[in-house]
Length: 150
Image (cartoon, rainbow, N blue to C red; front, side):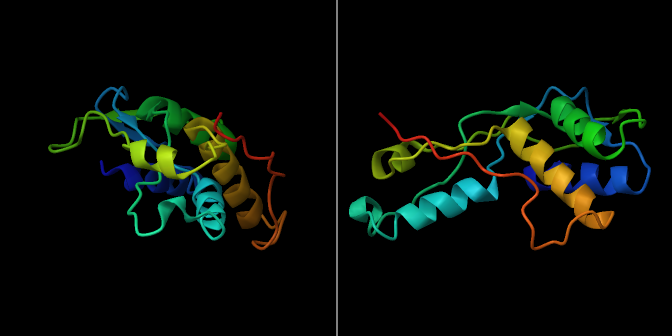
């Protein structure tokens, strides 16, 4: 499963009362980056010239296994659903992980959300929007300050 498809599939299935489907045993890992982290780094580079002319891979430094990702999303949206397992899909990468070495030399901030926390926050926000608890323009959870690299 392409990395961007797992989260979308799990959220969609849970909202429709269907269990998230995990291909293989769930041990494959993915590297997700929360949009707030991307926005912050881009904001920083408006006033910091270290990345001028550079192409950066903005990513995270932790991986989450597919089974944990499905569990986090399921627990936020449809806790009564069971996880479903299916045969592996041909061509799925075992592990994905961003090379952020250049980002670290051109940036003074660390990411603030782990893959699990970002998945939980996104799932909760989507659930609250869909059930009418908040409008889509509201932020579901206050954000802590960013950490700076030593």
